[in-house]
Picture (cartoon, rainbow, N blue to C red):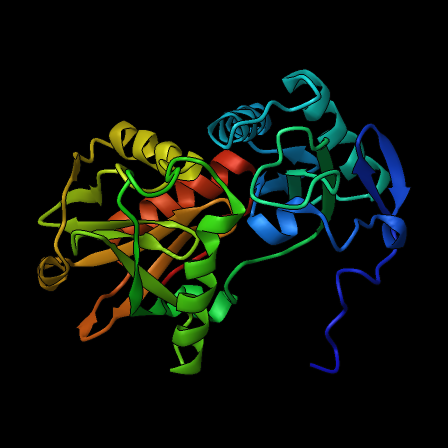
Length: 297
């Protein structure tokens, strides 16, 4: 932990409510509603060669998530897009990560927050890889999480909302404590859902299977990889998948803005090897975003 650079003690600028603020001055009050009641939505975006991949799709999802939580963003899609680009430019981010977030402020403290100000901030920083190159080459290890993705009748499951990530943090910590890289989450029915921050795919008899996103985010990278698979003539099957079906999978990988396309080598008692389908889609994805294709074998 000695080499850890805290996120509140860095150089640079953060865009906040329409203006650039020095990084260390980008603060909010301890009685901010979002801190207590999780009334915030956010996005995670990747910068490749100075360009934010699928920027407008991310901003549109941010606005949609805000509506699901009952508020409107005080800026247009175009204004937030431009703010994201300017934040990267002022921080000299060529290859990195962008984090827009919108939240209810500190004007009211209680469950009801009808008149709170809606704030928006955007930060960006260098970020080479979510998982180490060594782990991605071999295939990461996943623990099957104890916590489950909730019934859509109990939470706004299609919003990228901060509160929905509480069980992700708990699940990832538990996985790391057991020597794994991440956790595979089931849903309230016991079906496979996703990892703590990425969607999951598995190759079974030459076809690509992935859970139907009826209680979790239909990820932007997920949709991109499905399109790449179809262009390669790989049949994609979206359906309910039970954990025991992992025994039939030849290959498994995760997809996400941060995870990109990450091969999985182990999930609980099941083991896999990155194969032709995983390598093809990983390399195609990296070509699409402008990265040099990484070798997985």
